[in-house]
Length: 232
Image (cartoon, rainbow, N blue to C red; front, side):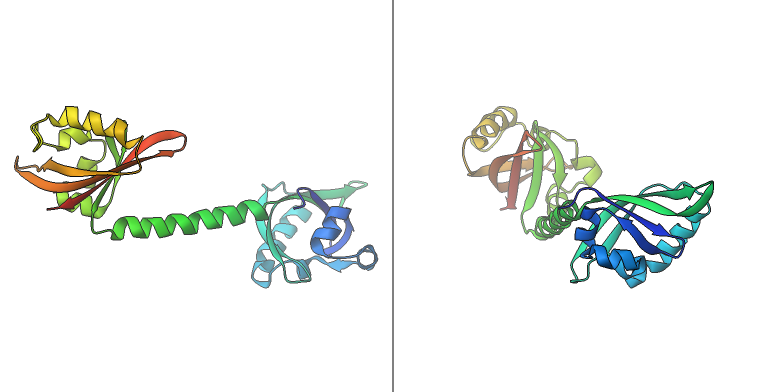
C-alpha cells in the first residue's frame, strides 16, 4: 500500500517528475522517468478521453475537485486512486500538472467484497420461504416480501410496527403477547436460537398460527432480534 504518491506531467502529458512511491507504484524506474513516460500508458484505454478532458481543463488554469481513477501498472496489476491535481506554474505560465493521490485500492476491494456479500444475503433474504423480520427494541425495522404476504400488510404498514402489536392479545399458551415477547427477546440474546408457536394478527382481526424461530445478533454495535415465521 502506497498512501501518498506525487508526480508531475508536462503539457504533452509526459510523466516528468515523480517521488519514489510514485515510481514504485507505477512500476517504473528513474531511468525511464528521465526519458519521459507517457502518462496515458498508465491509464486504462476507456478512461483516456476523461483524463484528457480533465488535463485540458487544468492546463487552462481551472481548479477541479479530486477524482477517483483506476490505474494500471506495467505488470498488469490494477488499483484505484483518489487523485488531487492542480496546474503547475513557472514564471506565471502553466507548464504542467502536479498530482497527488491516495491509494484506495484496499478500501475499494473491501467495499466490493461487502457489496457482493450484501447482494448475496439480500438474495437469500428475499428468496426465503419463511417470513423474516428484523427487530430493534421490539420494533420491525426490516422485512422480506414473504412477511408482507404472511401479515397481509404493505411494507409501509409493517415497518415501524411493534411486534407485539402485530399479534393477538393472548398467545396459545394463555400468556399475553406483550408479556411473551418481552420474555423471549431477552432470552434470544442468551441462546443461539429458540423455536415456539406464535399467533399473528391479520388486518381483518383474524388470527394466523405460525411457527417462530428467534435469534439475536449485534448490528452496528446494537442488539437486534431476527424472527423467522413459518405459516402453519
